[in-house]
Length: 343
Image 1 (tube, rainbow, N blue to C red):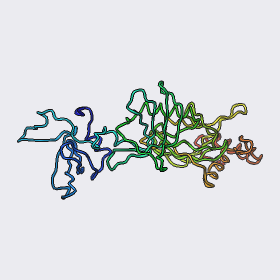
Image 2 (spheres, rainbow, N blue to C red):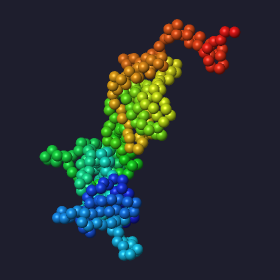
Image 3 (cartoon, rainbow, N blue to C red):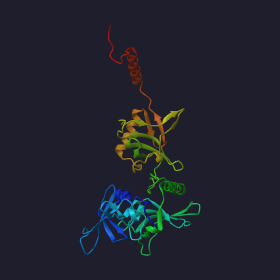
Image 4 (cartoon, rainbow, N blue to C red):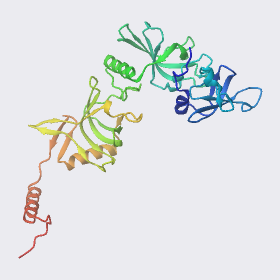
């Protein structure tokens, strides 16, 4: 089947290719990728018996051989097809985009076998190693999840890429969503394959993620629970550890009190991942725990890990009197100065 006008080969190679990688050409066999420009793909014929750079071929952005006689592009007149591919089996070019966590399924319409990719053999892009094997019924509902199948020798299976196709981004998100509901685990990204670690309620943790519009943000927090259904992390409190674009640092986001009942902040996973940076949540070290305790203390609150609740500090009488005096001085001086002048 012709690939002309179906794939922008140049765009795939520009984003995911690498200089020196091998490409298959229907005209001369294996080639070496030399360069990719806005309009052309340059390759050298890779002959084992000779210098691999002894002969060059040029292709347009759709992978068609570029031939010219004078100023006339012969390949355009002939309506040439794409003649370069990732491997001799003429795999689809999107195989270069397969990464760990990519979800693929068999090309057979009624086959319910899916694989989560571990890695692709990028020497010839002919096979891939699966991380997990997932079975679904005819309604695409997941029935079981198994570890990567192995050969009789105990080695991980290598599966031909041509037998499988990559799910689009929307279907991949839905696929991971179904895995989450089946397993009760929560993933940091809808396109990732590493579930978030388990924590005890009240445990001190550290979160780092790409906050939309603010770049990387780092927080120290007290963990509450995961909500798998809504893909949400609930926290008892969180303290900003670094500055964002607004210049905020060390600010405390903690519980709100309403008739003695507290509620905490939450993080929606689907709103966080940006530019391929998923959320990371790890156990807090001693310095992070101190950061949380200090921020709570500054807010007049202490955390009791055994009862999993907050207590409000009672201010000493001398401190309360001092605050009242300071407030009175400010009210007597509209300019905002705390200095008292004697008439």
